[in-house]
Image (cartoon, rainbow, N blue to C red; front, side, top):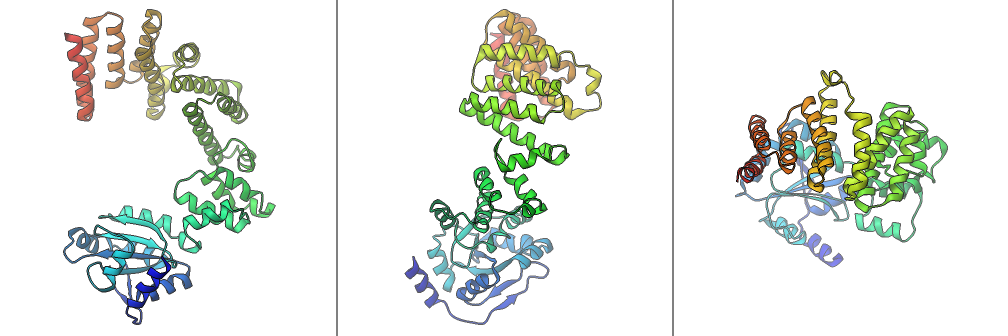
Length: 408
C-alpha cells in the first residue's frame, strides 16, 4: 500500500495551489494531490474530494445545485480542503484506480494519510451533504484511521486524550460508547467533569444503567433535558432486555425507573407497562395477559376521555398502548374470556380516536369470537378509513384480503 502511494505521488505533477472560485459555494483548490495531502495534515482538516466525469448528469447537477449553495460553501470552505478532479483524466484516473471507484459522482472525506473516512456515492442534495459535513468537520482533527484507533485501544492505550478521540470516531459510526465513556470519565479531573463539553459528551454517548456516566446523569435528574436523556437510556435497555430475553436486565430497568420517578404511582404505571411490553417481546403469553389486564384496568380504561381532547400526542400514545395489546391478544389467544378483554381494550382505543388500524383489530377479534356479520361491517369501515387516511397500497391490500376471507 505504501509503495502504491509513493508511485501515485511520483506521477502526480507538481504545481502551486490556487482556488477555483464557485461564486458563494465551494472553493476548489488546485495543485498536486500531494500538496493537498500536506495541506490537510498541516491544517488538521479532512480533504473533501469530488471525482466526476464530463458526461455524468448527476455530476453536473451537483455542480449547478449543490456546490454553488452558500451554506455548503460556508461549511466546506471553513472546515475542509476541497479538491475536485475528473476521474477520466490525468491523476484523476490514478486516484480512481487507487481508491477502487466504480461510479460517478463519488465524493470522499479523506485524511492526510490517505485514509477514507467516508465515501458518498451518487447525487447528494444540499441537506444530505451538509448533514455529512457536520459529522465530518471534527474528524480531521483526529489522527489515524478508524482501524488504527481501534487497534491502539485493543492494545491497551487508555490516556484521556486518546479515549476522547476514540469516542468521537465511534460516535460518528453510531457505535455504543457506554463502557469507553466510563473509562474516559475516570481519567479526567473533577473540573473537567463539570464542564459543558463533558456534559454534552455524556448526553450523546451514555447508554448503560450504571457507571460514572449514569451516576452523573442521575445526580442532575431534576433537570428536564437530563431527565429525558435518562428516560431514553432506560427505554433503550428495556428493548435490549426484550431482544436478549434478559430478565436480569429487565429487573435493573424497573429498579432504575423507580429511582427516577417522582411518585410510586408514576413508577408503578411505567414499570407495569414495561413488564407487559417485555412479555410481548419475549412471547410469554400468560404473563403478558395477567400484566396487561392489570395495567389496562388500573391505568388506562379509567382514563377520562376529556383528558385527550386537546392533546393529540397523548391521545396517540394511549391509542397505541391499547391497540398493541389488543393485537397481541388476537394473534396469540383463542379463549373467549381473553378475546373479550381484547375487544374491551380496542373499543376504548376507538373511543379515544377512531382509526383504520384499531378498527382492523376490532374486526379480527369479532371474527375470531364468531360474530362474522359485525366483523365484516367493521372491516369495511377500516378499509374506508384507510383510504381516507391515504394509507399505502400494501396496507390497503392487507385489509382487502382480510375482508375477502371473512366474506367466504
